[in-house]
Image 1 (cartoon, rainbow, N blue to C red):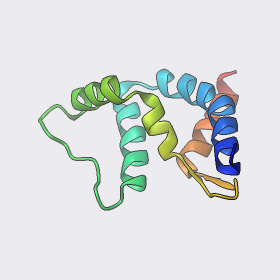
Image 2 (image 1 turned 135 degrees about the vertical axis):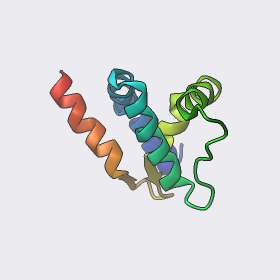
Image 3 (image 1 turned 90 degrees about the vertical axis):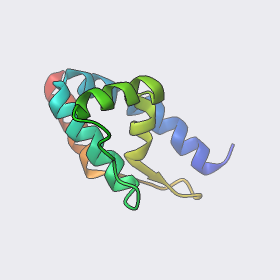
Image 4 (image 1 turned 180 degrees about the horizontal axis):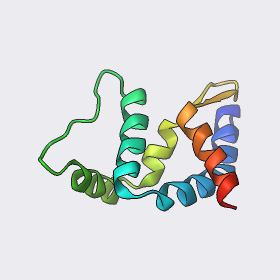
Length: 101
């Protein structure tokens, strides 16, 4: 297994359950802003496009299709050597997790 695969394995095992708890505790308006910001920062040339007059419903539909793991992975950058950086919003989510538990 490569070093970056090992890092992703650790990240998903350690952080993902905590991320799910935090994001599911958010009201949908806050969740929308959080997920949109992660998406926009990772897809800086292709930002989240609001497709209707109901952007939160659109996000709910997108999450239903793609899953939360899709957004979660946007919160990390993993290099081939296994080193990784954590998006500031993901760090904030982990701080929030500590206050919830």
